[in-house]
Length: 408
Image (tube, rainbow, N blue to C red; front, side, top):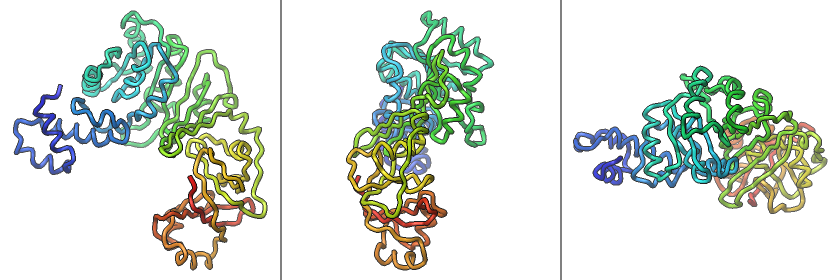
């Protein structure tokens, strides 16, 4: 528990530079400055993820890494749809954001965490938050101690079965390098899966947005669905749901691409890879039409490139240029909508004149030999304004600059 003196100190120094706080520690001999700095740093990082927790002056935090790896409140609430009114095992508890949100709509949750300090602070936070239906266990779950782990579950309240098992496996080695193969995650899901399916019909796994969905589905097997979650067009998480007895191949897996936006609410597209394979694209022939459409990041990650065009009756710029055009304004398009002002050839004359007409613009590239920063440097324009340039390629291979104003 935090004493009132420490709470007051944190409240007065929450907006102060961290280095200044550390350097002034000698002035406050009765304050645990190290703990205060941890909490101040954590609360600042939590603002964009768990605003509700960042405002609390009575929560403890062990380290900043657990905050960086934690789910946001938006993505944690989304996971509630996978289990309602049952028992959830969170095998990689961490900061406890997912466990806490699972506890809000389920009978109870068992939270497992291997790091002792993180386990202790999170356990205390659950008490502070009034989440009295969360059981906490300080245990590392891996293939080596699986038998011990199963015994622990059966001893806790006599549980021998769970409605959902949830894992957010570690995806980095000690040197900080990202691991993209699920077989290299910690714990290794492919090794644990059979044993876990003995005590639950369903396993939900959180993956990095960088993951290759098809290869992970094929490596895991028994995958019934894939959910891709973005917040304000920033892809945050991929969730795969494994079910006992499911023998679906990748082509039959249900894919849900979701994007939470401030301006347009929730955008969602649901399909199977088989439907994407069967869809037909129509491509731009002689000209781009009145509007340009850019799918949101979840759709782009899902690979629904042909379906997006066919569903909204749009023409695609090229097979590998994931932009679409049409003459009708689509109010509910799941992504950004632009009104095309001009389509220019990418050549020396264009480069020479555009900066005079558009001294400021936002730059995006799709299937283009330059990155946005490289194109901005060549065009010699500043960031900002209401105009967006798309550097892109058409089916013919011709490079174009599509100059637009954003509608939504």
